[in-house]
Image (cartoon, one colour):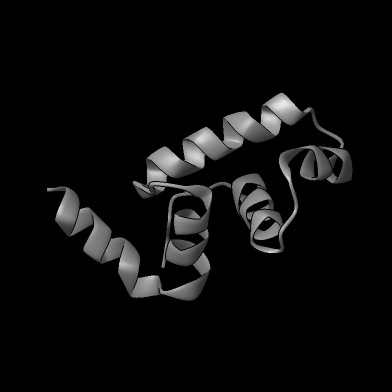
Length: 74
């Protein structure tokens, strides 16, 4: 399912799913911690997610959940 995330945002969310913290993701991707936080803010908005763990669930655990979240939002 297309979640309208960039490749970098998927990469960051995948690392979040693996348990990495923002500063660890920043170090691994050679970007600033603030850039990671900015990406996470955009990810949460695009997915209409309540938290990072909710975003991980929507993208990786239950592909149908994103559609349900969109309907619920309306």
